[in-house]
Amino acid sequence: MLIRTRFAPSPTGFMHVGNLRTALYEYLTAKHDNGVFILRIEDTDQERYVEGATDIIYKTLETAGISHDEGPDVGGDYGPYIQSERKGLYKPYAEQLVKEGKAYYCFCSKERLDSLKQNAPEGAVVGYDRHCRDLSEDEIRKNLESGTPYVIRQKMPLSGESTYHDLVYGDITIPNDELDDQILIKTDGFPTYNFANVIDDHTMGITHVIRGSEYLSSTPKYNALYEAFGWDIPTYIHLPLINGKSVDDEGNVTISKLSKRHGSTGFFDLIEEGFLPEAIINYIALLGWCPAGEYENREIFTMEELIKAFDINGISKSPSVFDYDKLEWMNGEYIKNMDSESFIRNAKPFFDELDISADNYGLLEEILKPRITRFTEIPGKLAFIKEFGEFDLELFEHKKSKSSKETSVDALEAAIPILESAPWDRDKLNDLIKQLAADKEVKNSVVMWPIRIAAAGVAVTPGGCAEVLMLLGREESMKRIRTTLDRLKGSING
Ligand code: GLU
Image 1: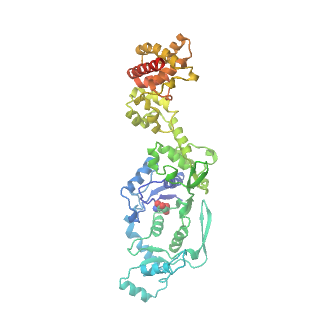
Image 2: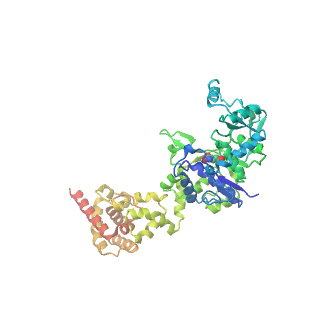
Image 3: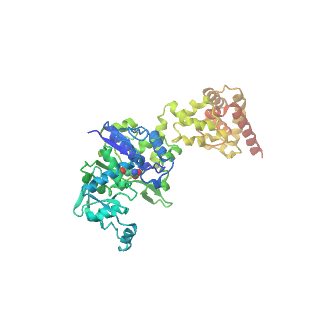
């Protein structure tokens, strides 16, 4: 059987990581078996329409590397792939059920339906009382002729139970009397969401329906439709909730549905924070799916590897917790393993802001790669290049380096003439500075610490003394070292 899966987002203008995981699992399920992955836009609810939202969906899938074989933008044999463009298609299906006695016209006014609710005991779930389910032919004809507005409702079974199988949650059974006579077509002639969803899945040949577990309870209604039409029910895979973790001041941990208060939950918000699309996808793939066999315990996967390794049986029904620290770690792994070209491409916007010359890209790649877990850390790590002010001279007092303000004055005075004429080359600078320490018969750090601090003005820099000098260039380095030396002398004498 050719597997056909679909991602059916409603264009809300925002792609939550939960939706993205659904899309990814649908994609992987199809691709693992050389199947077809479809994108369908579910915009029946025009009131919720958000301008530009469909573009965000395309952009998200593209950036995430999830490519659809059929969809509004790429076409396919089962189109149109946007529900609002399929409007005319649904009503004939509902009419067919009316003819077969499986659905009926309901002429109840809004007032009547409201009164049902008002007269019900407080807190009761009020379904439709099926008033129009058994109207006579005559009554129906009269109502239609007089143009009374109507909806089409499905006749749901009145007794017994319905059971369906979900690949993750197992058998799910509900008593049929909990099923309301659901509306298929609204008074405006358009389908309800539930009806359109089933008609679309069937007419698009969908074999596997993958969606969030919040749909578990609606599925019996969908199945009642498949049964009424005599259609094959697709394989259902409901995905467990994604939770977030919060820790209060006292260290108490609370787990609740992932929301903004836990951190960014939108795909592009995470990208903006510096997470790489590949790392986000890799992390999300493991949120609720556990690799097995030869992939057991593995954490880093390319999309190709995910396609090979993915297996529906590895989906867990216990809710997962979105762990931002883990994502951060994974992002760092992706950065460490990046080739130079990709590293520079990702880092360049940040380098450009600091006016860093391309001559230093190689050096920066080497010193930053092991030190960052996100590219957005670069401005912070390299802030010393742009910012230099009256920093605290106590930084020169550093026991471990055997450095004090006095030894620093001495080291800087000796270093200045050497640096002034030194070839501005990392290895040569390193050699010269080490030579200076040897000549003075002190530890390297006694010279290196003050030079680096005097030039950078901060205690922590990526890379050591020679790297900082290389990044600043001779002119800026000398200017800073001289200024600092003057300040140091002043502070000792004063
Ligand atoms: N349009 C629905 C949503 O965005 C999709 C539900 C489904 O996959 O059937 O939640």
